[in-house]
Length: 522
Ligand SMILES: [Zn+2]
Ligand SMILES: [Zn+2]
Image 1: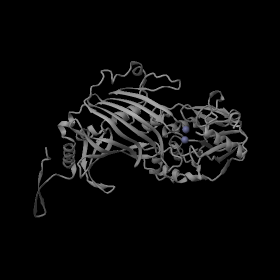
Image 2 (image 1 turned 90 degrees about the horizontal axis):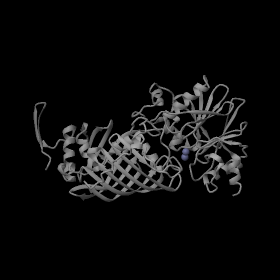
Image 3 (image 1 turned 90 degrees about the vertical axis):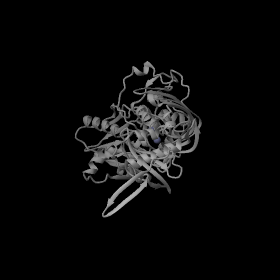
Image 4 (image 1 turned 60 degrees about the vertical axis):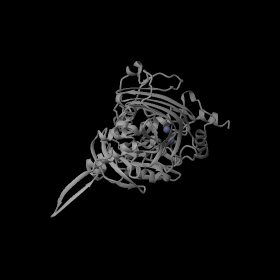
């Protein structure tokens, strides 16, 4: 069925304009473009007949904010995945079998099952035991959002959405019919290739804790017919133009036979309370692809301040810790991990424990998103950010990102004309003191985890804070083959630091002699 031509009669000044053509703009233009795209894929009827799918694919994931340098992205896994969806039931089952390559090598396997508001995750815990848990609310919301982005569904979702509009343009030298619409509270752009009429990309803005307003994108290619519908067999997902996931389909079936319990969510998972906000965020999926912690995202924060020396506190209670150092008339915070809400909870806890002293400095151990995502909240408090000299551009970028999707405290003070936050660059070492207490910030060379790594050393207290190079484990256990731990140990010895305790971004408070005992053996 070809798009019906629209005949326009318009009076412009004294000239009567008469023309018949498919509209190019507005809602009518959007619907015409969607009709053409549906036609190219096999027609609306064929598309609507696809009620469920099974898609088997192989792929690779990357994380753009976990590279060796801020400018580099990092491969985090390769995987095989089976996705079964039933669009009418808002049901999806994802079987993910991956090999993690970063932050440590090893298998990464999980099964997610969602049916509407019910969801569960099955993934082995540290002891290797798999027991169903209720799916994290943000991960759940993101998966449901993604159902409407799937190629078999995207035109139907767009057609049924509000705010349809069209404004064609060229992107990367290719002309697209660009349809915009609102879906799930997000503004979505569908780019339809003007030459083939096939959907080429779906783009939507969301908030990222570190990157602020972020352009998320799925790009499709390798179109093949599956049961009378043309569907892409290659997909690349991007964050701000950088690939985070590339897949090729090895098997695709429309309306397949699905086991009756495929979408069954275990009672044990449903009995667990659904704690937290359902914020659709690629951040949770990117963390899950690395097999690392994201559980506190969009949830109430717990902060435990443990005094490690008079006026020195280890702020724990989450996957990532900070160190608070009290000076005579101000405070230093070492590390602002995760995201705004984590920082706000830590700031509130500090203000309660040490009232009346402003937070004058916050130190960033390294640029990775989970160790820098909370910095903006401290900058909003007026704190100067201490960063490795090589990371100054990265920090400046982070402190000036637009943040309109989920405005934070810094966006608010900046909208009121606050001066740009100050950045203190550390070349090799910088000392901070109130005349009595001393904190020395050192650069820690390593060539595996992150360049531009800083550690904070308190010489009088014989304490050092580091992140990711060495995370003290309970019982003082140290893996002798860990290159990051060796880099940290070597730096402490080379600098001649007198360290008793390692109070780190992860793990328990450890004894340096436990690390030294293992590393000294070579
Ligand atoms: Zn890291
Ligand atoms: Zn870490």
